[in-house]
Amino acid sequence: MNNIVDMTKEHAEQVAAIESATFAEPWSRSQIEEICGKYGVIARVSLDDDGNVVGYYSYNVVCGDGYVNNVAVREDRRGEGIGKALVKDMVYTASLCGLEGLTLEVRSSNARARGLYESFGFEVGGIRKRFYQNTEDAIIYWLNVGGKEDFKRG
Ligand SMILES: CC(C)(COP(=O)(O)OP(=O)(O)OC[C@H]1O[C@@H](n2cnc3c(N)ncnc32)[C@H](O)[C@@H]1OP(=O)(O)O)[C@@H](O)C(=O)NCCC(=O)NCCS
Image (tube, rainbow, N blue to C red; front, top):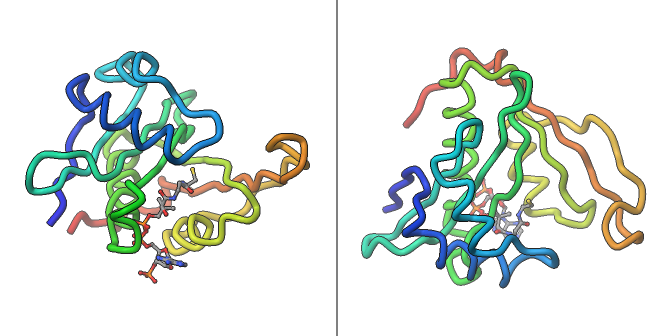
């Protein structure tokens, strides 16, 4: 059972630990604290039954679209549906905010994340060549949230 709630500064240490275990250029704890409750940023965490952070996402709202900063699940809890629940929540919060779309970048080799986004209807909008460490392409995904009016939480 996972409970998805707004990220607060209390979660920042655990989010930072997942960031640094996951990404080559992780956000620091202070960068994470900065986005908590910030106007124009949606940041949410998935908590286990003990209130520990098992996953999170954040996006910035710019000109009516959501630009996703990060989506991650703690390594020992991957493959249990937490990522899917987070992306579902992300689409739901974006539709509640009246956003037109959501966009994000992902490494071309990240098959799990790409499959996850595509299962929610994200479509490839472009490719940034050698975006990561000047070697790997970034795939740009878009989701038309405005076109998902029938989306229901559940
Ligand atoms: C990408 C990520 C967020 C997915 O979270 P997750 O909790 O592991 O994903 P879920 O368990 O919800 O599974 C979602 C889909 O991924 C795929 N998947 C899950 N486990 C998989 C595995 N071991 N191998 C390949 N695909 C897998 C499945 O298609 C699954 O959908 P399905 O259950 O309908 O078949 C997580 O793996 C992660 O944190 N990765 C590192 C960070 C990252 O890559 N973030 C995204 C780029 S910003």
